Image (cartoon, rainbow, N blue to C red; front, side):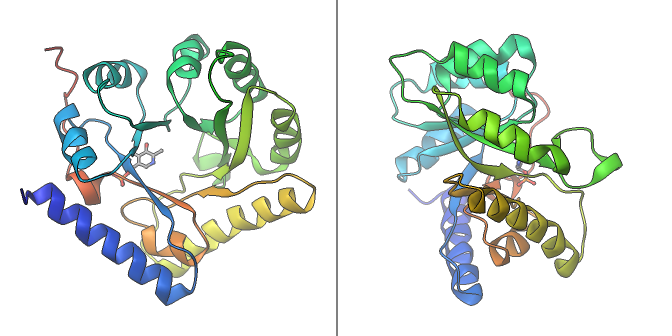
Length: 233
Ligand SMILES: *Cc1c(COP(=O)(O)O)cnc(C)c1O
């Protein structure tokens, strides 16, 4: 089998490795962002040995998890989280990248089943100030991180950001460097963090250059997102 998806997957893995070598950093993990793409595409990638998938909308995620129960996948939630969705997220996901306030962290902790390993989380940081509404403010991240690190059913792994779109590589790098710096401060203050979740289809090179450990790639892998994929069949 050599589908278009398989070719894009192989090409993408190669570019990630080449860029990592070029910048002298370890190659980050590729998180395949499958939101608004059908479960069948996830299955195709899983057949090639890929396990890490990222989703943003709970309803859609729930359907896909049900359709793909037979596969051993690692599910990452990367979308905005409403309080009333924390329970199913805590019960079904392996990672959450988009924790931006203590209330959500506490609910995920309280609702994580004892039988499961702690839920891996990243704190989403707002690096663009007033132009973005999601993510914790930079000056609140220290306190939030210290509090989240105390929660026994969560494992705080690091920071995540979704910067404003910028065309220029050096501008993209500037923003990612800020996140890396913030992460280093937390590590210096005693938190054992190992994950910098940064870089998407259009700013992957900048993220790798600044030490991303997890690229969240949708479009460059699956193509343009579909408008309506949650077709219950
Ligand atoms: C959709 C999404 C992505 C993937 O974006 P692409 O530009 O399609 O690669 C990455 N991160 C988050 C949080 C997203 O919502």
